Length: 326
Length: 294
Image (cartoon, rainbow over all chains, first blue to last red; front, side, top):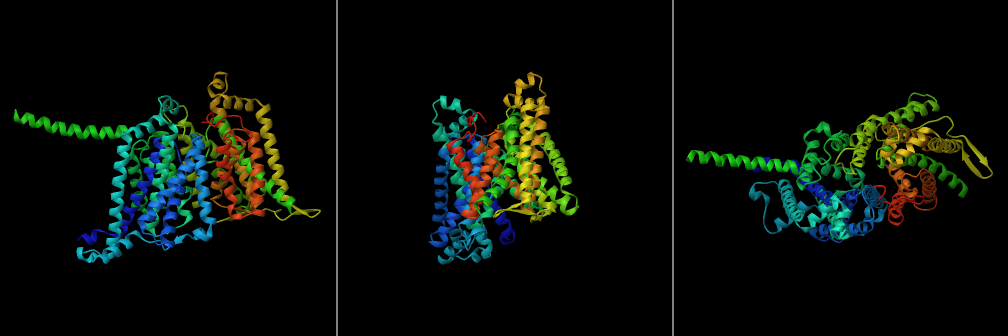
């Protein structure tokens, strides 16, 4: 029975939702300190290519490759982030946009390493490597009634879900910590935050680098889930797509990014006829959101409303019980 | 060889300059970056293809049609994507940027659906007419593009500095509220600015079609990014800086293609953006600091 529900296609879509959530969180983190970065696709590409090349040429384990991808993206993020701090608002957006394009052009032209616009194929697939590992230790998917294919995608999805839970937990915690409050203060008013004694340079580079690490991490996961990458995967459109996840879902709360990524990944899959017009709809969403709801679908007041409603329901239950007792 | 490359570079650069002028006008008046400008330019080029190649009409009609359509697009852009955000409480300064990115995606994919992803040829009657001056070959098209660009820049400079509307525009750019108090119809001035900027994008579109004989939906993006690079190079909101920056980028790109690796041609603009922003954020000719332009 389990075998029938677990259609590999659905599992694959779910895996992409998870990767997109990581990307959305990466842009949410940079936005939370008031910086708009359009370079997330570039960092994603750096992570993906680093991990893919390391695992293909040096036969490193996938997990080492993925971590290396995230670290390299983070280092480049810091290198870009420190000088880019002199820039604010639209200037940072343009500089990071330029950075993303330079990265893509390098991927296209550095043919000896990246194989140009053809892209890299034959990247070790996360699920298949795990299947081999499980078979080596004497476990066969048939034992729980699953086909190899289902088992592979299920395993990948479970890992991604686990990663996402950890990430969301971590960044929710961080938001409530000194760091999160510093980000919020800088977003509100940079000069006032500086006057209050915050080390703006440190916090801005931190948020920029966190975004870069997450994007590189997501890119590396993407490479090992899809097993094929090309420079076109990390172009300007990808950066815009990632931005839309956060802008549509809500750029002020982390759940907004999660909601935006989930909804906008499912939408073209659920409505096939829409997928052809996907980017036009994305564009319309951006224009309409900015005009009518610049903070995105989910913001703090929506979350509070949900909390209040849940609480009041519990409250009435409580009240009726008291009445009965009386 | 060197002089021919220089002529190629100046031809390309004068088109870049016109695109950049559209960016710089909008930035100067509204303080925002119009990310849809590149796509409006691309629509202008496609209007040129449709009028000359499909309908078989002469080139001057193509110019008029492109100006008309892109001006209308500029008006719509202002009404739909920019005006609702203006003067609203609590809207971040990034909102207009994101909103115009939205418009740019809509336009790019619209033309993708209408005209297909491939290159469309742009035919004109005098594409092959050329002159020999000594050992140098000059195409008539190149001269035409250069003349039109210079004429356009002179007209714009004259309009900005000498006419009443131009003064109103400069006053609005200086300070919107004060200009409004002094009796300038700022709403109309802003609309006019966006319309003129878009129409210049449309003209540039036809010029590119003439110069390269091919038009595709993706050209808006790369031209838009190059336009951004130029106004950053020349100083945001600076009209003369946009012209000089455009010529500079055109010559630099042609130089890379002729004497370097043509694959990295597009990278010149973006590397320029990054270095200029880091070393001299006010641009080569600008006085404003990066902060003032927020």
